[in-house]
Length: 451
Ligand code: PFF
Image 1: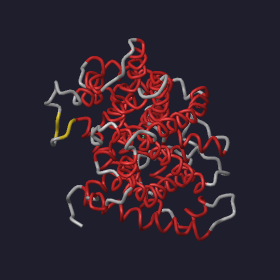
Image 2: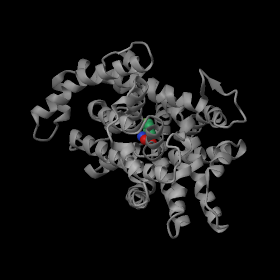
Image 3: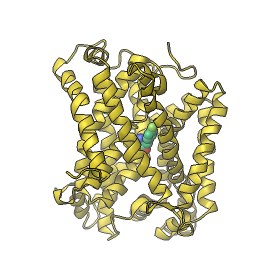
C-alpha cells in the first residue's frame, strides 16, 4: 500500500516527535522569525504569529498528519486519494514548486551560516570581532556566497542520495538540545545587558496600532513556513507515523516546542539590539550581525559564536533534508530514477534559481528585481505568503469537507481514548476557522479585498 520504498516508518512516539520537530526547527526560528519581527513592528507581529499558529497552523498540521497516515502515501497520490479526484494532487505538485523556491533562498542563508563558522574562527585567531561589514562583504559578494551555497547543496545531496542515515538523525537529536542550551546562554547574556528591557517590550508590549494586512499575511506565511505546512512535507511525515501516535498531542507538542525556540531566539536578539542601539529592522542580516556582537561581550565569546553557528548549520541540514526530499521522493517514485539521480536533479533546479536569489542580495546586481522585490525576497514571498497558504486552504477543504467527519475523527482518535469534545472542536476549526481565516488574510494582504 505504501508508495515509499526507501523510507520506513517512525518506530516510536519519540521518533515521530523528533522527526516532525526536526523538519520544523531551522532557519525559520533563529533567522526568519527575528528578522520578520524586527521589520514588522515587534509585538504586533509576535501576537499575529501566535494566533496564526494556534488558529491555523495547528489545525493544518493535524490535518496533514491525519491525511498522510490515513492514506500512507506521499503527498501527490495522497491528496488525489483523499480528495477522491486527481485534481487534488495539485496540492502535491504545488508543493514541489514551493520546495524549489524555498530552497533557492534557504541554501543562500545556510551558506552564510556555514561561512560564519569559519569566519568566526578566523576572526578569533586574529583577535577581532565580526561586524556588520563582514556580513555585507559576504552577502554582497559574488563568488563567495555562490561557492558556499553550492557546497551546502552538494552536502545535502550526499546525505539525501545516500538515504537519511541514522547518524544524521542521531546527531540532530543530540545537538538540538545543545542549540537550546546555547540559545539560553544568549538569552541570559542579552537580558542582563543595560537597557535590555526595551527589547522585551518591543517583543511583548501590546501594540495593536502596528497590525496591518501586510503584517497579518507575513505572520500567517511564517506559521506555514515554520511548521513546514501547506506543501505536503508534513503529509509525507504523517504517512510514516505509527498508528499508536496520538496525533493531536504530538502536533501540539511540536507547535509549542517550535514556538518556544523562536521566542527564545527573539529574546536573545532584541534585548541586545536595543542595548547596542542597532536598528531592529536590519532585515535578513540581523542574525549575522547581532549574535557575534552579543557573544563578543562574553569571556570566550569567539568560542560561543563559532558553536552557535555550528549548531545553526546543523539545524539547517535537518530542514533542508526534508525540503529536498519532497522533489527527490517524487522523481524517484514517479520517474523511476535512483534516489541519487533524483536528488542531483532537484538540487540542480534549486541551484539555478538559487544563483538568482543569492546575487539579488548584492548591490552589484541591482537588475535582479521583479515587482520591486529582489529575487530572494520574491521567492520567499511567493512561497510563504502565496503558495503555502493556498495549499493550506486546499488541505483544509480536503480534510474538513471531502474526507467524512467520521473518517477524520476516526484517524485522529485511532487507538486511544477519544476526547470527543476537543477532537470535534478541532474538526470544526479545520472546516471553518482555518480556511476562512487564511482566505481573508490572503486576499486582504494581497490587496484584493479591504477589511
Ligand atoms: N520549517 C523550516 C524552518 O522553519 O526553518 C523550513 C521548512 C522546512 C519549510 C521544510 C518547509 C518545509 F517543507
